[in-house]
Length: 321
Image (cartoon, rainbow, N blue to C red; front, side, top):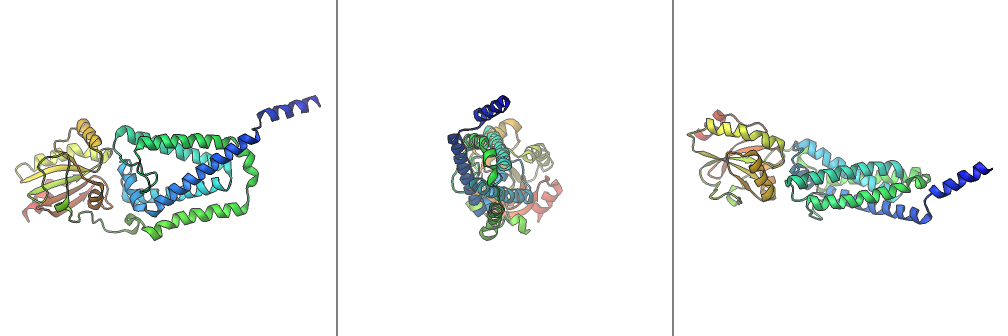
């Protein structure tokens, strides 16, 4: 009997108070609402979210980024709904913690690199820097830890109806892009990024650039893109082979001026790097991978290459036509 009393006393000491249970439940509700809002907003403009993922420079392959963006929006809707209606709280909170930890590390990385202006956490609804997003993700992480403290005590609320509701909302989140605009990478749309925008293109950070006159080799790039960094010496060799040809080389990115300057300082490209606004940048890039190399003469696109640097004879031949 004495042993039983001791065990009961220990359980009483370890069990959270009703007030703590309410705090945990409130944290779950806040987390759920934020995740549903985040997933829903991004699903309504998945093309924008795809471009925001590409701006981090870690994944630029169009099909992969489109599938990743779609999966994240559906997952956020699934987790948010599960937290709101208290469905399988412990595994759901474990997955939420992993997701938030990943977001926090990613936004911190982007903030340190300085290659991203908008974190993309809430699509076009709110524009925030990576450091701002990392701080907010840190708060959400704390909420997830608080919510998980009471997760075991809510586990009895599992039911088939709740599971159906969670899956239904996740399917709605996955279906939203079908009505709001499926990323063209998933539709197999042609890479038409070389649409003629040269006449209205404003290049900042580089003096005397006029892409409507003479011939230019334009490199669409991102400061954090590993392939863009690796292409610097290859582009230098290409221009040596094109020595004597009436053509110049320029890099264009939509990153912040600080990020592009950091790219120049670290990789020392033997060509100027300028900044253009995001809209013309993504118009020119389309669904291609970075870097995209475009041959322009007098404001007209002559050739487009995605990924590998073209051979000098290809460019020479196009210039001769």
